Every structure is written in structure tokens, then in C-alpha cells.
Amino acid sequence: MAAQSTTRLGNEQPKNTMSSGWTRVLIWVTIIFITFWVLYPFAWAIITSFKTQRQALEPTFVPFLQFDPSIENWAAELGLAGRETATAIGN
Image (tube, rainbow, N blue to C red; front, side):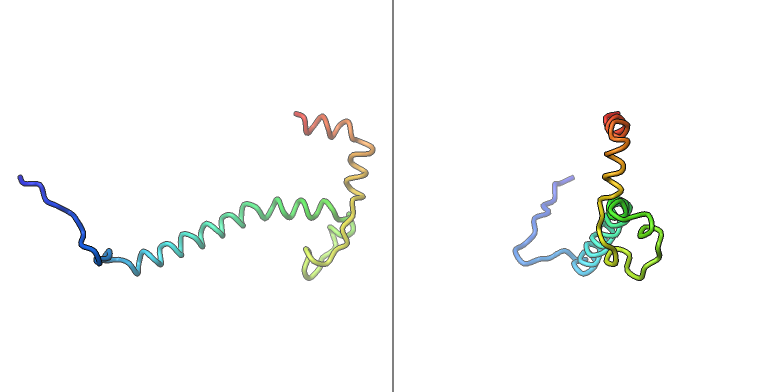
């Protein structure tokens, strides 16, 4: 068997250029969706930690925009049970 050369000439493009473009778009949309799916619970937990209990349980139209940030929960947690929280974080 003789070895065949697979060298491309200057202006040749792959045959499936259109499908590879759509494939890239689909891959990036999937990556963005999965990233949002994974990070959303963390963002929700952090935002909720700055709400009072009443605000956290109150249904709102746009929950992330309709609240007054408060550190009451953090002050209560670190003030009264600071040692226990530090131990839990350390473990």
C-alpha cells in the first residue's frame, strides 16, 4: 500500500461548516445553562441569608430585587453561637 497525502489546499473549508457552527452554539448554550443550574442555589442561599425571616418567607413578584438587605441573621448567628459556627466551619 502506498501512503496517501491528506494535505489541504489553501481555501478549502471543511464540508460541514454550517453544522459545526450550530454545534458550537448548542454546546455553549448547554454550558451556560448548566453553569446557571449549578450556581443558582448558591446565589439564592447567599441572598436569602441577608433577609429577615419574614422577608424570606414572604412571596414577592421579583424576590431578588424586592428586599431590604439586613445582617440581623448573621449578627444573631455569629453573636450568640459564634463559637459553634466557627467550630462547624473549621470542621
